[in-house]
Length: 336
Ligand code: SF4
Ligand code: SF4
Image (cartoon, rainbow, N blue to C red):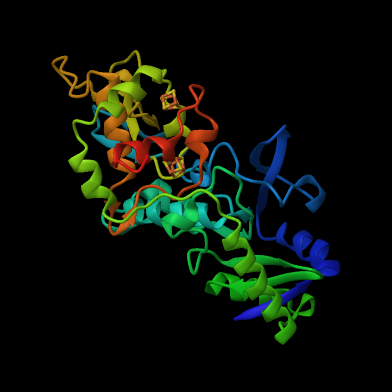
């Protein structure tokens, strides 16, 4: 279903979202740094943002979250499910929607992760169209447009938004705000199509992903890994800012009674030295070169048919060593 929301009706629509839950939108923090923060009014947001530093995964996978409290003596494990808040993520970009679809496959499809799933089911996603900068390569990754995985998606028009409805929840929002939405007419459709065409022409950065997994396998001994690792600080920023990176570490904090405690998980990073450290002291990825190669191999591989990179550009933008993801990939596969 396609609708139109006039710019004049936008504030009322936004105000109404507050009745559905806490609304988070892209807020400019400093310079070109953005963050999804709780917002009360549209003026607090910058809907022309490029990318947030920390991707929307933060809403579903806490950086550090208690999973269970336990009592060893009574053999009781209690899931730490607090009050579930209804959340609206407003202004999410298509690449981040694709990243969440990938996380959904991992956390909700095969083995359901209770904590992720509950938060995900309590969340409404409202997408917004964007324009690429010099770091975006989502067009190459097939993630510059989302056909599903959202509730509503807003595409800016000269006098409003062309609205695509992507779910039952989205339909309900439209129904509840019926007087604000009108049917999109032919002129709106034409403008939407023209804008999309122009947007695709704006992409300058490309990565050839045809056979990427094989190309990376064949480049296992490439000197580029060592050369790049020599520049890398091993800080893990690339993992933390990546919308599809999902490694976490699990730690049991046992109380002084040595019986009760809590099980906590926290974000981890395969670029950190201890990521490959296992019981007995063996580290199966002891060198930075191995860790870096592993990360690139992971990003160039598939999870249930989806590439583990959505081309958001965050790892390049925020790398303190200025390691350019696309450049390294191109060098490794022999295209640079
Ligand atoms: S962000 Fe850059 S410097 Fe830090 S681990 Fe990743 S590649 Fe290395
Ligand atoms: S690997 Fe880099 S460009 Fe790809 S999704 Fe992760 S942060 Fe974005």
